[in-house]
Length: 105
Ligand code: HEM
Image (cartoon, protein in one colour):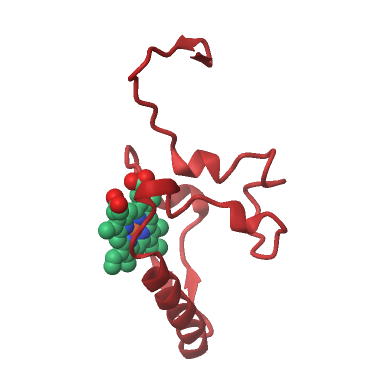
């Protein structure tokens, strides 16, 4: 088969960037807008998919459900202090993230 002009041979590997899949406009309309209630939200692949899907997924979800409400309860004025363009995003990594995030509270 061929993907984007590249002919694949039997046995070739294909690595799909998860961040790209999570911003597929055919699945997630207006993909750069944070919309936790979007109807297709459950179709994200942030934890991977298939046999190597993240083993820590239930723990990660529990931690986030506990930490996020608590941090905003304790620090109601928490905010990012630099514009988006100055945030130090990780480059060349499989899992999306940032190196530093200057904040104030
Ligand atoms: C928000 C937090 C997390 C995210 C976004 C995340 C995401 C991922 C992703 C994308 C993979 C790779 C899937 C692949 O190879 O195709 C993975 C694998 C894995 N994760 Fe996580 N993870 C998180 C938290 C955790 C935690 C808290 C643990 C353990 C305490 C954990 C343990 C693992 C393990 C053991 C694998 C390898 C599974 C395998 O290869 O069979 N993860 N995770």
